[in-house]
Image (cartoon, rainbow, N blue to C red):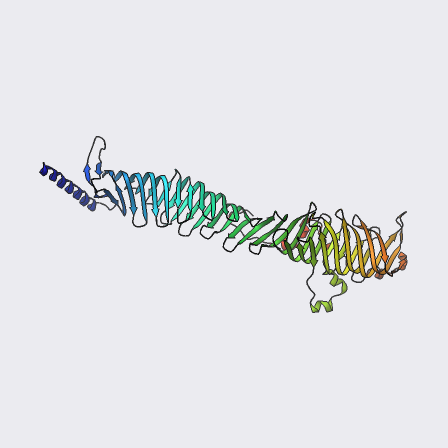
Length: 546
């Protein structure tokens, strides 16, 4: 009996040896049997198969072109170059890939493995858990369709289907993609993830939620390690109590920075304002935003919209203390107010809008006429009334956000086109102007210091011209109705005379520094933009229609 057992073992050894030698003589792609505890055949149940089984500590080891499969039981079909295996499967490929599962099928001709049952794939930089996995060694990729979980040092990603490109160390996830990290989470419809780069590229509706930001988009990329990325197609970032929209957005967590390019819109819901343009930057630590390229700010004021345009707009400051700074070619538009200046500051904490100009150079001071200097002054239009000066202040009530008062300092000039004459203008020149609003309309105006007036006077009965009033004084009160001058009262040593129309020469009908600037007045919102603004060529962004 003992001899018979030894004979069986010897026969088994020679059998394995012959298989090994035959495998060596054939092409390299033939599956090799490295070891097995026992071998048998059962043509009835497993025709053409060698049934390889574990015996003691000796498990079944099958090898094929760098891949080693260990199991408790394997059914090897030499003619088909194919096997199935079960029981504590361990699949390894070099030092870089290891997979365990309950069951595996392997085709040596196509170099395709199908694993199922508690599939766990492990690489130095990540792991994958799924119910079933197909591994295509020829194409160097693995994919699942039954749901999977990917983990690396700090992130976890789940999806319905996924493909792992082994050489590129890249994953492609589709359907219900969810990525979790201690500092953020991500949801997407399709996501490519490069493990070595820690970078994700996504398509379809995507949402990223960080500690203090949220990103929505339909295409983009994101560095999952440093929370830095760019986003396109219906992209929006909710950041620092602001909503940032644009054709292309950029975000960097470490620098507390975000930017937007093309069709930019920044909405500040707390301060009830919107800023549009074609390029914008957000600096969280400074609580500021800079907008250029056809920049315009829309601010809610007394249930109306106040539009402010400039080459550059800067919004800075926390809630209720925000300021908007506008530089170069500033134009403002409201249903009942229009304006223009070189620069503007809107302080929402005290409700003051300040319009001012660049200081004159020494050459301009010497060479400019009074009219040329006045043309550079900030200006407001109330209906047909034109008001200008060195500096203009529009003050609103911070609680009701209604206009409260108007103040103009230095070289005050008020001009109104006379409605009954062809070329007549009512004019007031002075040093300081103080105006009061009532029910959102400018009603009462006081002007002080070195006042000169030219005013066309008509009879109340038939609107016939009585004469042209020319007066100087130190104080003046003016009443307006529907943005037209209705009454003027002179105080403090007024000196004046009413001239019949025929007795006042044409060259004496305009005050020094007179300039009618009606051609600069924005008639519509589109007039806020210069031709240079309209001619801006926007950079091409991939996938965004022009």
